[in-house]
Amino acid sequence: MLTSVATEWLWLMAATATVVHCSAMARWIPVRRFWVAYPFIWVLCLAGMIAVGQAQGFSLAAMLVGYAFALIGLTVGMFPSRKLFVGGTTEINEGETRETYDYPRSHLAFCVIITVLMLFAAFALTR
Image (tube, rainbow, N blue to C red; front, side):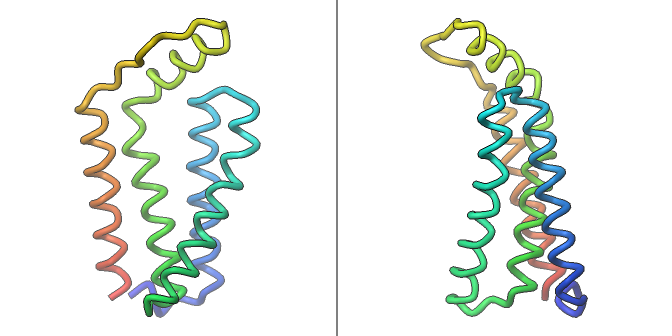
């Protein structure tokens, strides 16, 4: 279904997903170095995903849809953890470091489940 859409719209969808995700993470992890580097990391991930996907026989459209849906799934999945991210980052910026940072398993499970469900949706919409 989404593979019949013009590629320009899929690039726009991928760019929008990147902006939404990076903006959310920049708000949740208030560290300037992170803000600067994080979007470039995702652009490199997209480039790698497209290269590997096309080598495996997937279309560009399928890779762009998968990337966009995975990023939005990751953003939604990390939403319950936003206060933990802000608190941990604030402590680190103030010079306080703990030996371990508690991260509830329920938050991790929610993030994984939502991201996988979004990837299944992307797969269904590209067939």
